[in-house]
Amino acid sequence: MKTVKDFVLSFWIPIVLILLWWVSASYGWINPYLLPPPENVWKAFVELIKEGELYRHISSSLYRSLGGYFLAVCIAFPLAYLFAKSQSAHQQGRIVLESLRMIPPLSLIPLLILWLGIGETAKIAIVLLASFFPIYLNAYSGFKQLDYRYGELAVMLKLSRWERIKHIEFPGALPSIFTGLRLGFGYSWRALVSAELIAASSGLGYLISDASEMARTDQVFVGILTIAVLGIVGDILFQYQMKKFAPWSQS
Image (cartoon, rainbow, N blue to C red; front, side):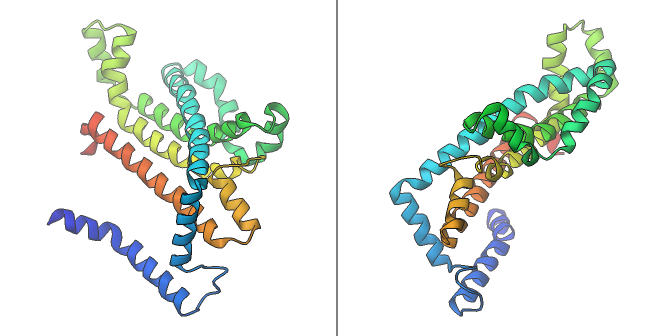
C-alpha cells in the first residue's frame, strides 16, 4: 500500500502535465511547431532509436560528462582535504579558487578552444569546471565540520594518517561528500549543451542544437527528455549508494 502511495505522490504531477500537453496539442491550443504532440515526440524517439542515432548521442554525452565529472572528483577531494586540514594552504589558494568559481565555464570556451583545440579535451574541460566546485565545496565543508572529538579519538587509538582518513574522517564527511557528488553530477549534465557547442558532431547537446536548426522540435524534446531521464536515473543511483554506504546520514 505504501509503495502505491509513494508512486502516486511521485508521479501524479508529471502525469497531469503530460495530459495537459496532450490535450493542448490535440485541440490546437498551441502551435505544433512550438509544442509538438506527445505522439510526434514518441515517433521521433522511436525513429532515432531505430537509426541508432540516440545511442550514439547518449554514449558521446556520457563519455564527456562522466569523463569531466570523474576528473573533477579526483582533483576536488584531495584539494578539499588539504585546505580543510591546512589553514595556510587554504589561505594561499582561496583567492584563485574563488575567482575561478565566479567565472561561468561558458565564458571560457574561446580560451579553451585556443589552449586545447576543438576536440574532446575542451568539452571535457568545460564539464570539469562546471562540476568541480559543488564537489569541492561540499567535501571541504564535510571535512572542516568534523567533530573535534573524532581527532581526540584518533590520537587515543594511535591511528596513522591513512587510518584516520579511512576510519574516521572520510566516513564522518561522507554525507556532505555525497551531496557534493549529486550536485556535481547535475552540473555536469547541465554543462553538456554548452560543451557540445564546440564543433561537436554527436551528443545530446548537439542533437538538440542540430534539431533546432532543422526545425525538428520533436527531436529537440527527445534530447531534452533524454537528458532529464538519465539525470534522474543518475541521481537515484547516488541516493541508493548514499543509503548503502552512509546509512547514518538518513536520520
